[in-house]
Image (cartoon, rainbow, N blue to C red; front, side, top):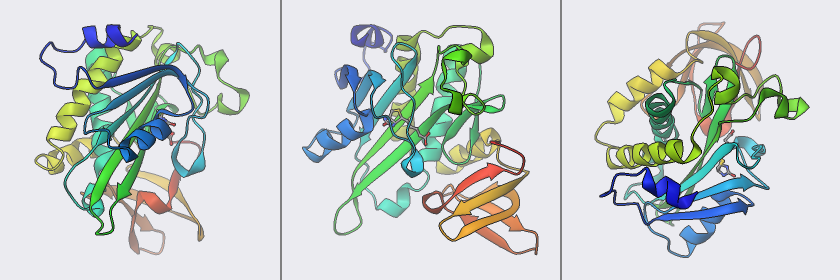
Length: 265
Ligand code: BTN
């Protein structure tokens, strides 16, 4: 699989030799964090055919069966403060939509902030984890992406049936895992190179891709649950919400999960 991924990358691609591949691993994010702490460089990519402890946001697990999904993490070392990377998950979301559009001729939507969706169900997610030094500067960022590619709908566990699906289950077309993995890696490089130069344009594209906007939403935080209307995204990826009493708020991803008023979306 690793050689097939490399075969789909441009010949002069600078990260061709930066891929670590595993048939099975606990979590590509956990492994990437371990090697980043030991000094692994910017652009190191960890790919696995399956994960035994795939992780999602807010302590959730990510179902990661073999030979049917893409489980990939990348180590980035941008020279900036942690607070300047608030838009990273959004930029990766747009990059992953670009990769799927290019490779599979479908452009998923994004459910704020990190879920990739097709139709009304989730086909993937993004998990961003930062390590900061004592001055608040980024030591490394690990961004993990999981995409459900070729799972038949009936193979998802019962508790995921209503919320998860795969590209194959929606389109009827099976996905070349190495080809889509390579497209994702190329898009991640372009995203990382332009992370700050094109932030505004990227966030405008995120707004276009975001299926949470112009909808009634329910916001879950540690303080409780509130409902409101999602009307925009700011340049840091914050969700702009108007409550029924007319007050507005910016919801940041660290503190909240958002659901549609009438279901997952
Ligand atoms: C979410 O659904 O909240 C995010 C899911 C992210 C899953 C990917 S799969 C590759 C990487 N390794 C992990 O353990 N998680 C991410």
